[in-house]
Length: 396
Ligand code: MG
Image (cartoon, rainbow, N blue to C red):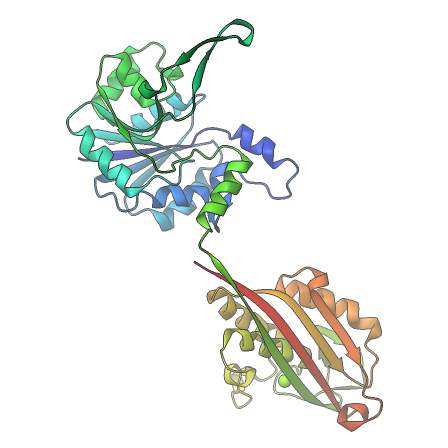
């Protein structure tokens, strides 16, 4: 069955947008709202990834989001793809997509962009059922008791629910029949699903009922439910890593600490810029991800790293942590230094490190100590820094 998949996502998502209120994050359409780390549209597209009979996908999306949708498609879809701007009604959006579909595909499967949970079994069953008729649609038997509303909200009667089903998507229709319905039904653009169009010209529609969960995500609450459902088996793992570094202080070296420069007659000696605090942070992160120490990554025997900024080193290590799905949540540090006094610089260092790590400032702690004149730090010969990093990752 050569099939065109039409994703109907042309709506403005008004109800969803209202629910977001004054949220600081804005999305061009609800299709881009992230669920379990991926835009909603990605989840919906993935539901069809293994359906072999789909030869092309036509997406009807709100005007203005076409290029953003294109970016998503590049990584998610292997078949040919077209994007059309949505219409005023759902039926109009589907019509615009239908006009752009390949006539050689004799079947059209229409699916709501906001139904990401449709199962492979349901799609297979739909394909098997449609063969012998004009159209097949996914549906659920109605479970609640349904009342017919009379005047002034008086109940007219109770409807026999055993004869009722709620239409969902996908809906699979013979292409020429759907085209015909659009041409012959004067109210076609008001139809709320494809089955209604086929029915209106006397076509036969088969219901494929299921008892799974195939919700249409409409409100912000729906998204919260979906998020909870998709992440229900995820476990979060927390680890703590420790780092420590000492550098000798000598005259004439620039003094870098925590990514900022401090004016001082002496500075830390080193193969890199000598930023002992960032080095301790690097080692703390390496401790969490189990990838050795900073010397393994940036050997002081390697000329390539001569004079390297420690921020560059930290970025590289952070990238590796990110690849392993580790996210830093908190950093605590101590710097032991006799002079210069760090009090006036602590706030700037905190800001800088928070920015590098992508953390709120109050998740980065900068503490400074002197050594009371004792030992190499106390005598002004060295700086020593210690850091503890707390990181988390979610496992599926
Ligand atoms: Mg060092």
